[in-house]
Image (cartoon, rainbow, N blue to C red; front, top):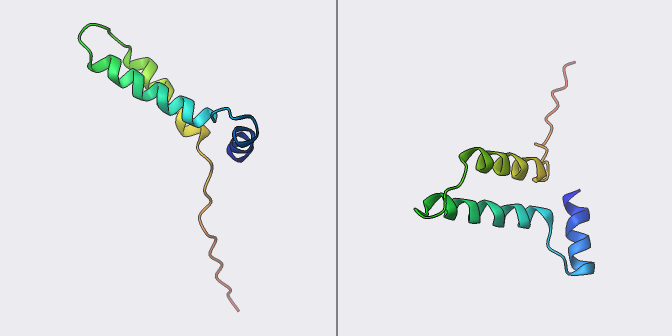
Length: 68
């Protein structure tokens, strides 16, 4: 799905969903550091979970042992 989103970004000039979530995490971290505006740690955790779900799956190389 990430490859599809990247392809759509190249065609349409839109940002990928992963990039948008990363920017939201950065802005939320800045809100948590700011004394004026309070942010929720629970919302930050949800954004981080979403970012992990959107990351492309990288399969480890398979190893096969043959036994005769």
